[in-house]
Length: 157
Image (cartoon, rainbow, N blue to C red):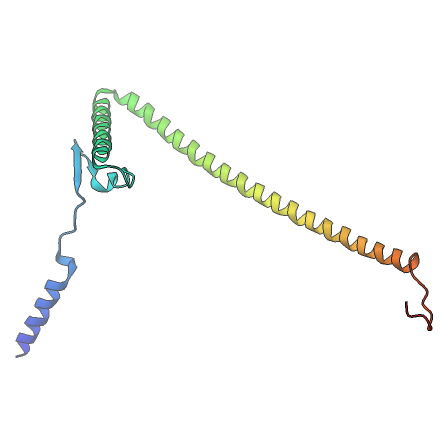
């Protein structure tokens, strides 16, 4: 009886476990050499509300452009000399460094501008508070010394 329970438990464990199932491969739409175009790459290509005919036209032209680009790139890789490929790789790396540096500097400038604007607003608020304080004091002094009515015990107003 023990063995039957163990066999039942083991069979339930093996049949319900996703570990033994083969991972789902993405659905390939087109292939050029070792490059694949997957369905997930073209899902967001067609806007909602597009007619079936237009959708087919958009997807077909995208696939043709993608395939042409891949074919030309592979042919260029095979036919261009090694020294030219090395030169292009250096240029690509430099361009990558330039892009990252530019993005970092833009982000830094935006943060700096934000900091300056916040400081200017804080200074403006402080100046307005000081001016308001002095205006209140000035008004009180004017009222107290120049416009004050002398009230006597017998008069109400």
